[in-house]
Length: 353
Ligand SMILES: Cc1ncc(COP(=O)(O)O)c(C=O)c1O
Image (cartoon, rainbow, N blue to C red):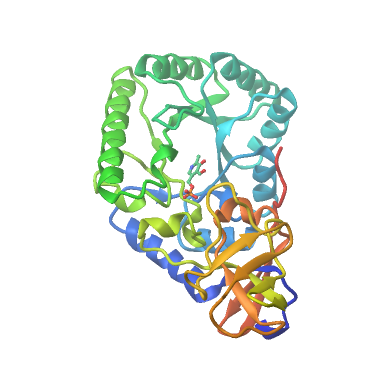
């Protein structure tokens, strides 16, 4: 099929740019102690996961039990759930997965450690645990080495839990546009994490893994980083928020829209905020730089686009935030030049539990 015949609005992936992003990440990690555990939240698509694993990913990171279930059903053997799982019903589902694959979960609470230990013992499974350390995002995680060590000791007392290391995701740095500020802050996080690792190991607990990192900070990591698992996700697609950072990755994800109406002084496209999200940034129109636009639910209104546009002309939008945009679509059409070369189902669309 030709792009001209695609029904719009639709999310498309530019295959050459997508594949180049995989290779760029390979290059960034080639001399690094980090192994990529790409975050599933950014694509929710098993077709992409398979390609990431073929490029050497050590496992897949996800945020939800339902995502982990889809990954395991899709054949992924190593899954890191970089989040807390506290609801008893979800803990039961976690144990069903722990019996099948190499599964890791995060903790930041002693009562949760006890609940996981009881469930793992009852199911007779072994669950790996990362203790989450708070490094400035103000989300989950304990704040001091003493609190981390107390949780590590609690994990170590449970025969069905295995302490595997530290989760330390400094997400507040990912979109820092000042490269010098970002790098300084990344190095400060590295210093704190290195210090924590030394304290935990001095207490008698080897940290096999330090997990975290993002698309925005991977290039700032020093060669001797203490991190071992890189959880970047957006790098495969990029978006208009990350475009502000001058990172080495290329945009590969577009919302393809069509001209629906041409009125004096304005042109209306057939896709709006029901086709992409606005939680981080407005979309960017790479083919119409500088053109002012307004967004409605099902329409984008271009004002004085500066060139003649006709009904059915195609217009590309780069979504503001790839991860949340993908979650609103059923499929990705893979394109190369003017041809549609593949179609990938967004396996875990809407999987929020
Ligand atoms: C736990 C965790 N790791 C890593 C990331 C990095 O993702 P990205 O590379 O898409 O910025 C995120 C983003 O939300 C995250 O929550």
